Length: 603
Image 1 (cartoon, rainbow, N blue to C red):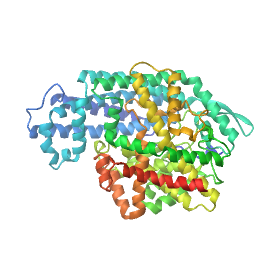
Image 2 (cartoon, rainbow, N blue to C red):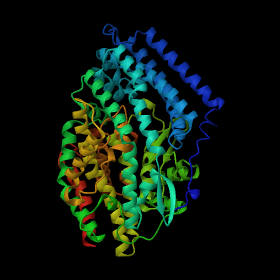
Image 3 (tube, helix red, strand yellow):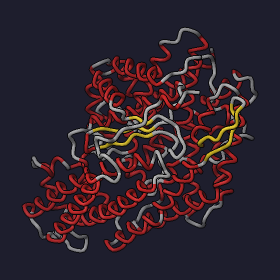
Image 4 (cartoon, rainbow, N blue to C red):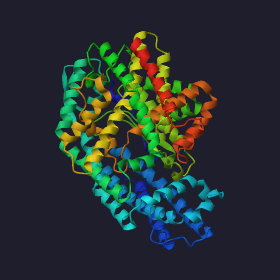
């Protein structure tokens, strides 16, 4: 196993010198001062849903709208920078009480942002007639036309100002508190496990990485140990999930949402027709992915694939990547695609943007966060030397590249929907996968590389559908009553059986997927699952266009990434003659994955 002492931890010293530094404390004071000034501005101009601006002329509306946009952009830039800095400690050390206290303070500041945004949203919805003529006049308002139109549209889904203010305040001790509980519990679980003849206590994230271990007995025992670990904390996590979903359901209903999916679709900037088309094509592909899973089981010498073999290596790719090896490989492949992407990755490696070391108290999985105050990103992963983890690093560097393409935009111009947020990351994964395949020198190595790619695709197409089905049923049933841990497990298992079908051994599935997937515990966003599938297939389709067009494609691709906060996915797709409401584009992308499966089965 790769020595964690050789892996980097991220460095944010260029943001603030420390959690208790004068610089960070001054930023807290400055941010609160800015928010007080914005409150005074809103009061002075009677910006409220209860005060109709219908009698105001465009010349009177303009300075109010511009004043709000300028002040909010400045405050959000500072807030996002501070939040990223504090989060860098919380996500890597859940025992850090100072970081958690500052996170709580920022959460309270976030409530004020929400309350101010609610006031403006309610007011601008009433000022629509005066606003419309201003959206085409050069200046700040025109620059924010997409944001303003979307804000007007979403203003219909507001409770009264007092209700919205109360909901925002209560969320801190409700959904946000439940989310923090899940994060703390899941990051602090340690498991005693025997590996290489030695018993050792390891973080749950390290234990989960053993699903790649070459020894099937180790994989099986790690699976069993993980299930036992989640079993020990399931009641607390079930309470957290009930609290989050219950609160969201009540608030959505009060805001006039059709159902729990409604707000998610609006946030993703797609309609139900698009989602239904996407899900339908994904379901059509299940037999193809089951064929891959059955072939994998055969290659591993089993009749049916148990969960602990789902991520097992197939073929022989003896190479394990040291951190320097991973950097060198990623940079070489990015260079062939786009020099700008390569330079971004080089900066990330040189300036320690990445925290790669698994350790107790650190969250599992991987993510990338924007640090707007320094126009940089920071990436968390749990690197184990596998090609899969090399791909993960490349994936997160895709998010960092996306952030790079947005540099120079105002914060309110960069609000990217989840459906487009995965575009650059999937592109990077595809680049790495295809490069690894092109360098394979033996059939066994090709098989191993295909397996890494197909394992990831299966998670995004098949497993994501099971997660969507799980969350949909949970939301429907939670509207009637709380669910028990047994209920969550039963729904999870049934969803996995419906999607994986006979591709897996139904006796050994993952009934505790709901306990540790952080996406279920995001207070403000439900159904953070289908956007991954959208991203995979959209990114795959774009990569196919790149293969046809070559370097001329890259400029258009970067332009797309720089525009994701100022257009919806359908509009951006049209730039490439793609209609996301029709199944053909999605089927074409699935066909690319099916060709990989055909090759895997034949090898």
